[in-house]
Image (cartoon, rainbow, N blue to C red; front, top):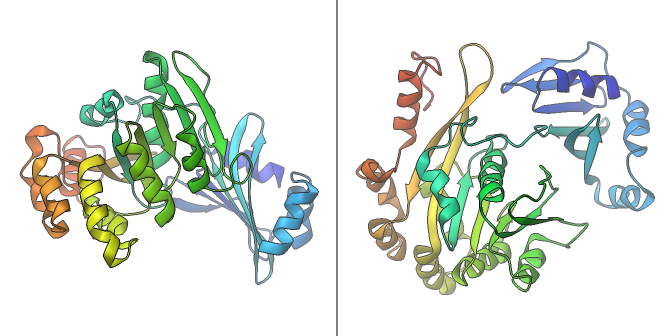
Length: 334
């Protein structure tokens, strides 16, 4: 198993799949590639990963049939999900970059970089799994760390990139190790006097409500959702709450939301990928739409406010084509 993981790291893969009865596979620039032609055996997978976990984690796996752990090999950190599947054990590994990428390296728009100067509010980065959401947020947090004296607390499942204190003080908490859940972590983080909070994911109603409250009470909150567009993001948040609570959430969200960045990673012509980002800035027009639950009009507002930095996904893709960063003839919107 170790040799497969090392080869995937050398190939700059983002993910590795080790499944009983299947050949080891990695994902490079969004595409699957075989690491070997030999099918994996249950015992081989189990032997390697059982040596990485303790008895308590083994018991958790036996009970839940799923286990998330953080693994490190030769200085490279990974998130590992061990799970049961029909043939035996399956393992999905997400490989984290060895260094936090700078805003320039990931081509972050200036209007997104400026969110680090906000005194409070909610900034959301959304997109499908593997679209670079955490990469974007950690890049922003590292910029704060380099230049501002702030108390930053992250709540992640698991911690992906480890920060070293520079101008800021940064505390990183693992869900299920340092705190039972995102909600619990957020509940108590408000007593720890943070300036900035990074919530790895707004998974449920309780964590969303806690994030809104944190943003409302003077904290700058960054978080992620698995939604494809800004409008879908707002809809997802609202739909989490029952009818009698929706009005309160609409008003609260319209007040605390600062920006939604919805991104996708698209293949470059040679190698690597580049992010296309839709950007929604919560100005008075957007706030009114949210308050009145007229979410279907959000895209129109994005289209007519490019002068302040808003950007549709269509325009983001057009700009990348004009810079020859992606295939000019391919339709990326289907």
